[in-house]
Amino acid sequence: MAIAWARTRAMSQPDRFEVDPATGTVRIDGCEADSSSVEWDIPTRGTVFGTLLNYRGALAALGNAVDAALYEALPRAPVLYIKPANTWAAFGAEITLPAAVAAVEIGAALGIVIGATAHRVAEREALDCVAGYTVVNDICEPHASFHRPAIRQRCRDGFCPIGPWVIAQHEVATPEALKLRVLVNGKLASENTTANLIRPVARLIADVTEFMTLAAGDVLLAGVPENAPRARAGDRVRIEIEGVGALENALIAERRS
Amino acid sequence: MKRARVLWQGAVHDAIDASGRLRLDTGELVGEADVAWLPPLAPTERPRTIFAVGPNYADQAKELAFKAPDEPLISLKAENTLIGHREQTQRPMDATYMHYECELAVVIGRTARRVTRADAYGYIAGYTVANDYAIRDYLENYYPPNLRVKSRDGCTPIGPWLVDAADVKNPMNLRLSTTVNGSVTQRGSTADMVFDIAFLIAYLSAFMTLSPGDVILTGTPEGLVGVHPGDEVVTEIGSIGRLVNTIVGDEALSEVA
Image 1 (cartoon, each protein chain N blue to C red):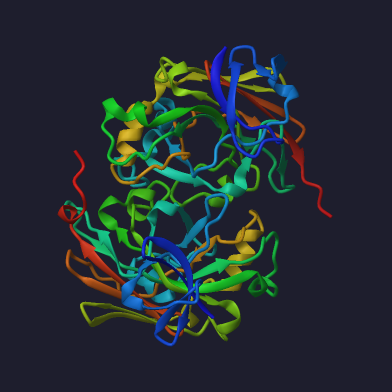
Image 2 (image 1 turned 90 degrees about the vertical axis):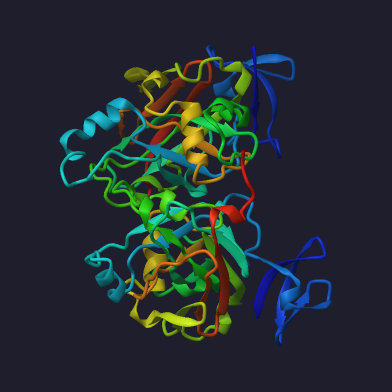
């Protein structure tokens, strides 16, 4: 079993749990339970920052657009966006898709949970600022252009499930080589690995904190792999990150009154 | 009522304007120069969402060679960027163009979901002044303005007062001005906004829930000029307040190994 921090809906703040990320087992009150049987709350509390185009394949997918006048150049520094508090959702929470949104992209993101104030941190010391890792579903409406901030596509209520827990940093030996899988209705929809990150975890923290301080509790998303699978209302989506955990949510159609 | 949050004798206090002095929540009267001013925003349980509207004055859209869009361009900023009245903002050594932006800041007072334009004013707690500094050297064409331009530590002075909404008769007709070392460099009126306050609240709340404490920075008129270390920048909006900030260079801030 590995050490994790999590919060059930009955708890006022996160506490220490023993979990097995591979099987989804959690020890609660001396008994082992499946994580899906627990009513989890969101395990993090700080600002959630997404990172755009941090997978080699995602950048490659832009293709010639990068060279054309469209973007002028490759991103020089990490391009971040914020998943504000209204987007957060817990493990198991139902995510409502408005009628106008036919399908969303399921963004499998490694959530790097900051444990200590990180300001201009050197790459070699960056992991010392990490409390642990969690699984984040960075949901968005498909949008081909990054020329404008995409808050309408990325910031709808519930578009950022997080959890079920934050696995302690020391339990994850190789954050630079974690397999990620997305399953839609139990079927494998995409696979990737954090080995394909342009800026791996430590490098990303160093480059972000060069211009912006990260506070304890903040969550920095390592990025979303290319070809994010799409899902619709009625689908069950599951994101698995090796050694970290699995996050499951159902998408439902909006009921307009 | 004009409300402030200040640090006095080592403790944080709520305070109100008492004819040029501050009446602390303890009842004590103190001078405005005797306290450190914090952003005039009550703490929130979750990180507040801070919206920044892009070119939102017809004249500024022209100055930046942008066509005023049919939909507002809105980006998000994180709380690391907020500082109070009479503080210092850093201009990085390598920057060649850093400019202020005098903006009316609208603070949300009630949970807002699918609010109509007609009802929007009922969801506002009050107004304050923000200086939404940008460092244009770091602008990239990915989700512009990217966080490296706008969400830097201490890059958004805000205050001094939160003025109760009830006390602002017509927020759509307030004079804005900026002075740099006493010379007027920017003048405008909130009457010239492309997307007015009611529109912005209706637009945002149509796809995301706004919470008490969320802040909308409503854009800036023309008259942007570069600022340099040592400059005193004063952004002032009609009856709302006069926000003072000083630009410092890298050397003025504590060294980081």
